[in-house]
Length: 350
Image (cartoon, rainbow, N blue to C red; front, side, top):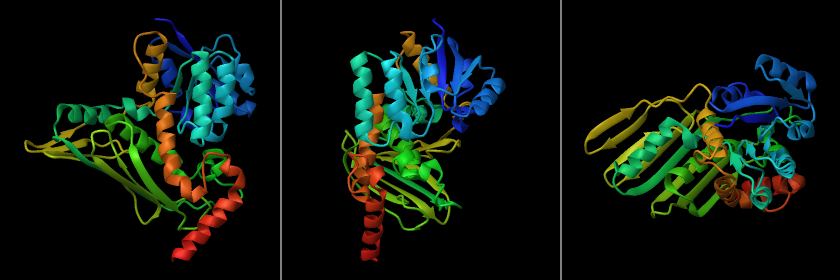
């Protein structure tokens, strides 16, 4: 097996435990270089994680002859630009989720990599976690009969920025493409795509009700999956408590689990109740990264690609279309227009 040598652009928090250590723990894989605009922080990460090289320039890392594939672990607002630079250098890329700020950016990325004959992978790592693979097995085995309905509910308390002029990137539209729905909702919608097939007949809406910032904080949607089953989902980022529950119903049973938890998954059917302990690995992205290494060695296929991630971004764009007054253009640059319009709309309906 060929040793796949990795480079990371943006070695921040997500690289500390979730992804970074995995690159050196997988057979046939090693982390050769990291980059961060703050050279001192890049050096610190490299020292603590035994990485041979560090850079403060993205192009230095991208064109390093000892880097075979680049992991882009920056906020979504920079994904497209960095990805196109990696593609121009003739190298594959692994990109944090969501793939980009909207489908327009995703399509430009996917088109470039396809044109260059290069693979493009996206960090929707739930596709390889044991708890979701168990759910897929139950569905394939027909453990709940014919699939009839999927329901998802997510609630969390409102997150208020202490300084409105310095929002966390997850609530800064120019950096994230939306609010927490883009960051968290994308994981749920992607695993639905994996478990049930591409989501169709998507309708949805969003609102800003807590007024803690300008992005959406309540989102609802409905959809249909290829087998004909219907689905509904809601996200309330301005709620009184925490809730995270997926309910998958069939003609003969039900599967219950969370999207972001680590507790057992539950199957209820005519045979009784089955509880399956399927804990997440210490480095939660490692199983997906293993499939990338396998694919680059012609020994398997990674299930999370630019094509599958584009579908999830298209779903989110559809749901947020009205809130942002369109999402095919650089909507983040006209924030005053969409934020004022959304606030007026909510006020007019109250």
